[in-house]
Image (tube, rainbow, N blue to C red; front, side, top):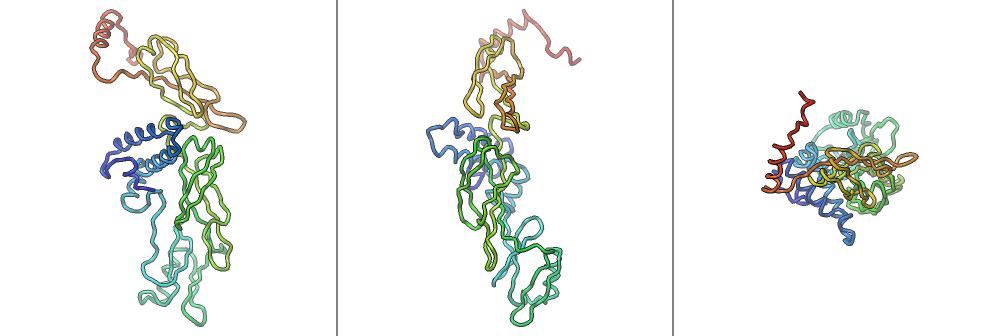
Length: 317
């Protein structure tokens, strides 16, 4: 994946507000629903969401800037310096640690090296086997060699509901097309048998893909329900009317009654799938004034203020 700053078109020193603004504009521009005739729109939209997941999150952004994670949010770990044949074992936090299996590393004796291994893996590093070079074995509490690969995948809200197919790049450089099941939720894992790492004398490990759901530019997830702030004009709020409301499916028409301000409407069955049914979509109207100065509107409000005074904050004391 490209550098997330490059994807969102912001400099590395951009403020959190600038990043959020850039993400919203790009997400709206490249949303698949707005580009139904563009087969590449979904890929661009997913890349924008993935970039925002990294630099739109304060902690992940710091980790990325320090070089601790890559553009896909995966940890960067280079193992121990030095050449020679290497083996792998799983260490604390899920990282894979490399260890040398050749002679005395850096002039360090067997006991010192074992102490390092003991402190890392919490077990005993058994000493050299008789004959040949020095080979260290680990006491892992009865757990066999872990050849599973763990990667993360960010999917859009639409993909989590409807399912689909997405390409994932493994730490090994290999790329796979992964089918996303409909109804997948954040934190769930997809297991691909035999797509993990390999080692002589061992069956190949599995690929474990942990799903995260990218923030949506319009909807907020509330359990199995969705929430949406719907902009309406001043005249729609006063006079009422019919307005189009986006959903995860096709847009629907909502009748706005007269004198509507900040009211929340419930659209049944327009939320997320849940056991035994579907959640709802809660739409809250927000009055948006026109951009710039409007002398006619200002004059109308001046006359209205003098002839129809009222205080909507009277209950606040």
